Image 1: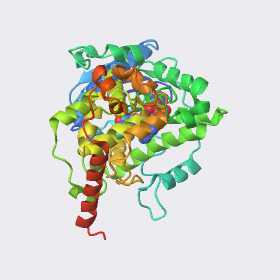
Image 2: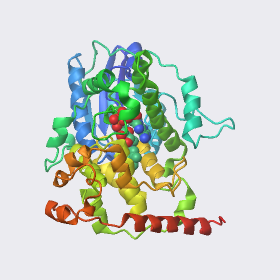
Image 3: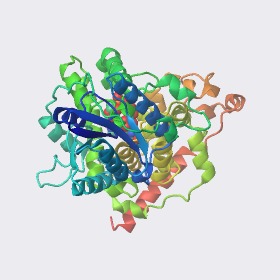
Image 4: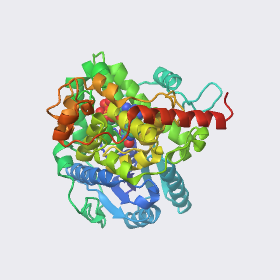
Length: 468
Ligand code: FAD
């Protein structure tokens, strides 16, 4: 009887799981394993909201495995040592996994592969997370892309969605000792997560339901509705994609068969996810350092803990910024348009280094993803590779008036402002008496003056770097 371990990581699903399918095709029994090793992902070990999601997602995977005659074997500790022990205990001759493309897990996986092979355990890894391997798409001169549009044109031209691999109906397994998901201590000790419980359904079935809801109700209008934070115009698939509860190839396959105007636009957003992974793979230092080194000399403001706290708490006095930060705190998610606005406000109006924002998002987002978060922050701060010149500074008032024209998004998350009409809700300080009555704070900073200061910082950078 041949046995293989399947090492689950960021692929918490049974359908369209190439490592699982390949293990089942060549072995009589498979042992599904999850090893909790947050230190191996340091310094970007999962934050509090991610840990909450992970707990629920592991529980869902375990249930799905049990309904097929198997179970998830959960362990905590060093990945290599755990896999070695499990291989010995089950007499497994092979370990299968799907690749994670972040710098620390990539290096760890290479060590695991070499060490297992050295003791005669065969290893195989697969792409289950991306439409295309990050190294497959290069410019004509064989370099990584630094600009999205040509990258996407290249990827789109070669993309051939394939049907998803079916989930196994039955999973013959060898049972060995296992810990429990509860013992991993992923849930918060002080229970702040009731709001998340009510809103999200982690796991493969939840991912499937989110995809179906989007295809049934939202994809037709996606092009226009995706920018409006007050409605459910986007898919909310981001945490499901991050944890691998659904594959992007499965989504691309569904899109190919859908008849809808919004599908090409939606596919392009998955393209941004691919591009972020491409950049992270080729520029692994970008998680902590400016992609554009010219910004190493930018005169960031000295960290102001009180201002940073007011930004985190949604008490800056700028309505759409505060609505976004409160949505994040209550739900673990924030609309993409608003993510750009709060990030621009922190990095440009408050001139705080983008890492302060990236770290807060890391701890509070249920979809916190090293590739997408790094790229989102660097893009908005203007320190990245793609077109968002530093001097293009979002005005949160006019952006609010454009994308939340009736003020409903602000009203939902900043109830103090509920009595303001659509004309004044994005600039409540223009009615000082009503603002005082509402209890909502006055703006933390003057938007026009802080914009000028940010531009001056940019000018000083140009001079320091020798521009005319
Ligand atoms: P949809 O509009 O339905 O898009 C479908 C999928 O495409 C998303 O689930 C996501 O996987 C991908 N996608 C969409 N927009 C982007 C984008 N701009 N960049 C990369 N991928 C994209 N996304 C994360 O998944 N994790 C993060 O940690 C993260 N941090 C961000 C930080 C900042 C400052 C900014 C500006 C953006 C960040 N994003 C992040 C990207 C984007 O905001 C989210 O992916 C999106 O809001 C998720 O909602 P959705 O699933 O409804 O998106």
